[in-house]
Image (cartoon, rainbow, N blue to C red; front, top):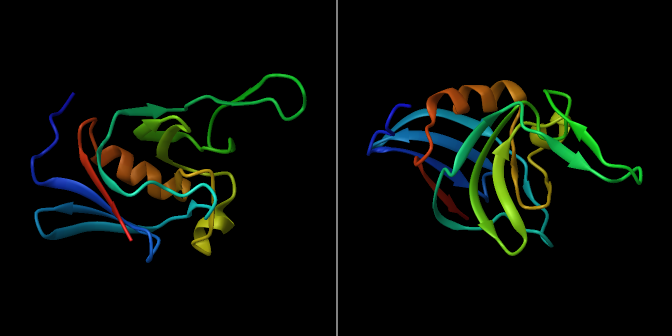
Length: 137
């Protein structure tokens, strides 16, 4: 595993609803995102990427039975990067099965950050565990 560059970081601007990959002051990419609903806000602050997963498992019990979904058509897409855990659960940056929410930069999730699947793959390939994440408004 590569070590993250000291100056490499991700900046998430909640008011702009945009994620940007930075190296020093150089912007290396910027992508639209959907963020947490006002009742389940995306947390603000300084974080570090905890883990990166390809084809993460999404578990739901909506049908009354346990159902596991994987891949780009799952609610979290085929890439997931965790950045924070607390009493509400784990927060991550991930893909989505509903690109329209990202395209309109909605505030609709339970606190996670949704990106278009093609965009999360670009960011995922450029980010290592330990990379800094700054979430601001």
